Amino acid sequence: MSTHHPTVLVVGAAGRFAGLVVPELVRRGATVRGLVRNQAAAAMARGRGAAEIAIGDLRDPESLDRALAGVDGVFHIGPAFAPDETGMGLNTVAAAKRAGVRTFVFSSVIQPTFTPLANHASKIPVEAALFASGLRYTILHPTNFMQNIGAAWPGVLAQGVFAEPFPKTARVARVDYRDVAEVAAIALTEDRLAYGSFDLCAEGMPNREDIVAIMSDVLGRPITAGEPSFADWAARASLPLDADQKRLLALVHGHYAAHGSGGNSLTLRALLGREPRSLRRYIEELAARA
Ligand SMILES: NC(=O)c1ccc[n+]([C@@H]2O[C@H](COP(=O)([O-])OP(=O)(O)OC[C@H]3O[C@@H](n4cnc5c(N)ncnc54)[C@H](OP(=O)(O)O)[C@@H]3O)[C@@H](O)[C@H]2O)c1
Image 1 (spheres, rainbow, N blue to C red):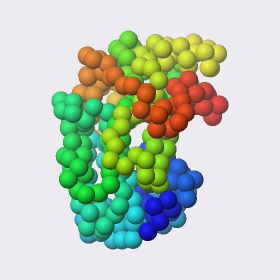
Image 2: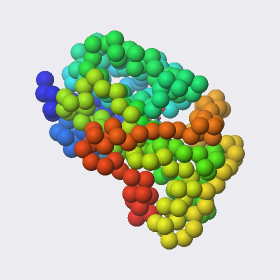
Image 3: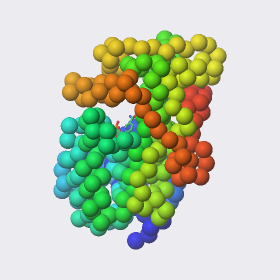
Image 4: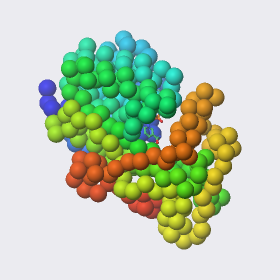
């Protein structure tokens, strides 16, 4: 087995976030096998650099056994707000053990022990399974993704408003998932992150007033901070979530309203050996693309 040029199964290789891990792995000489559910997703994963495709389902352990044959490492991310997210994670850990995989990277969430949020609590059993698995694990605890702002960007340009359904004064740490992807790829191609659990946050805890100030500066026109109700915001965002999943997402925003969401950039800076990508840089890139 080659540790530094491993074959890595990437769960969700066609997805918005795991899809960012694929090019980082390829850049480091890994061979990526993308786990996808259908041929359309296979084409997307190949477009991101996956050399191999495994059609499989996290709910189907036999398909995971096939997908993991001959694999050195696994990147796993749980589908957001899936009611059986825990079971899918446990399936992946168990299949990785059966396959004799060496390294398992789990993209979890910041503060998984904040159990009033179901999408945090659902990650705890997966982390516990890794601790007891004998696998060489690395667990990533990313905060709120800057890419959520990217999803809202067309509306920002069209309406001149950046809206999120919690107070504009609530401070929330953010991270560019490309930095998380880079850490994941380091963990899968080098030894230095083995058996670590790492909080991953960019510098600062901006509130929405800070964010629209950056947007206004970068765009050269005023952008205001919207505070819609969750229902109005969800309707406008046309989220691919059912009613129960929306309820769980609303709890996250309720948490932000009550407490904000703290995070510290020290670990990410140390892991990358450079400054984490900043929110300003992310917004500048969005503006350059428009
Ligand atoms: N958004 C944030 O700010 C934030 C912050 C911290 C942590 N997180 C965590 O990050 C994760 C984000 O998940 P996401 O869904 O939004 O990301 P995503 O990148 O869209 O990943 C979901 C991927 O999983 C695949 N998938 C779904 N069900 C599957 C199944 N049964 N079998 C195989 N593959 C399956 C999907 O493939 P298909 O294309 O086939 O559906 C998709 O590619 C969540 O665990 C969330 O808690 C999010």
